[in-house]
Length: 375
Image 1 (cartoon, rainbow, N blue to C red):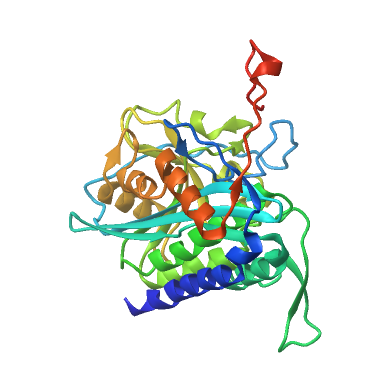
Image 2: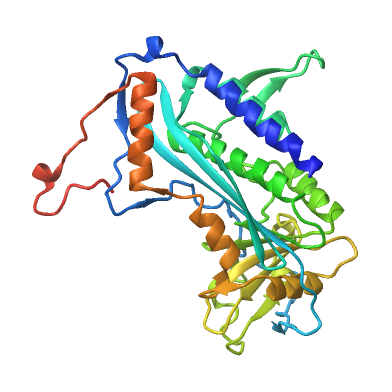
């Protein structure tokens, strides 16, 4: 589709800019690098946990008495069937140097329509992020996400020439957070592409539709929802590791009183107003199969569509694997890094930038026989 050309070009253009900002081989020759150690059996999951820094305190005083909504059982017969597109993204932190870090990114878009699958992969090689360019790169990421001053402070005295002046506190003060700002940017632009890949279907995201977070400005989520709705698509996000508590109860317990079948419960009426304002759409506890666990599911239906209609269409259109959407499993499969992938990318980074590996710190002799792994 023509609509997804611009986001792809935006993504590729910025990666080219980052590559141009990376130090040359002459500048980095002999620079020492501390490579990320990955055991042979490991699969790398270097993303930061989701930002869900809110939830109801069971001891908070409330002015209104709210009761939980009844559990809704999935209505397969009346629900329609449509295409589903899913997105996931992964990051591998390959190593750190005295002046930056080296990462690699992978994202995937999986489209399933009429029992046929289409896979789009977005992958980088080693990306050297030099600390001296942190301000300008974070500024540019904010521009791409719709808010130029989200990560940095900006001097707008000259409207035609805004000038980033300072990285905001907490945005990228360590290598882990700095790398994850790139992973999040990469995933958000991929989601922007996915929202135009199907029509009258479901755009399925890994995570939550939480507003007011450090990594994503609200304007991006609202634009994403508008883009999805403009193509007739409902926006649904599934969180595997939700930390949200509603009325003092974690999400995974909110369907314990329900029959063991595919069902869901709207939790938004139980949440405080300041918490509901931080969710784009409504938050649900959802079970996708008879033996499946309970997940958090955020739903932003199409304009003119009810949440129930969107949810039932999703249940009717997506296959489940062990109680989890199979299409999200496939998106994750194409986005993670095995230990062999990491070793290969580290070798590429070393050759590309002439990096000299530093030896690993071995504390087993000091802490033996209790082990020397860092805690």
